[in-house]
Length: 190
Image 1: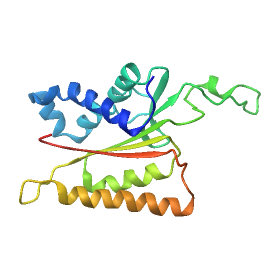
Image 2 (image 1 turned 90 degrees about the horizontal axis):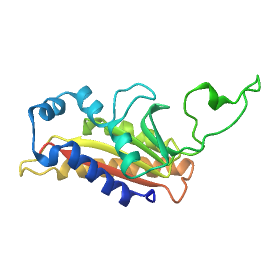
Image 3 (image 1 turned 90 degrees about the vertical axis):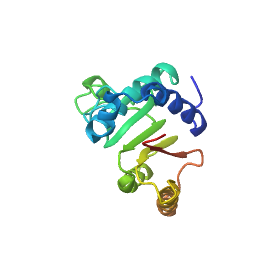
């Protein structure tokens, strides 16, 4: 099991993306998915139903975070990865809650939000600040190049937005000093 931090997640993402994106060899199937938001999200995260299969979650657990568990659409978060230690409390009938289905981790190690459109990713950034986890990841995509064929202008705006949202959220209630945020931005020709 690898240490949970941004550096190790970047390496895992590059490995996953290289395999999923056919190492840059675009196929018709890959292009079709890229051009359809729902298909692309399902290709990366899985469908938007709680507890369903996730390509990214499955890959991370099998290759990088053995002994952990993932869950999709956990409290409106696209994907979480947590140790398998779950809370064990009794309901009012004395039954252990975790035996009734669902997933109730005692701690979230990684939370991942995936947004196909960079102009909307601030909403996902905001969601990440409202949940406790060791590593908070936002994956988004930039489609707009500037006049020089560069993506820097929008990237700078997004980085400033992300920093501003985190800073403002921390003014109200400080986050654990060990928490890391990671912004991954892909582009069509990356």
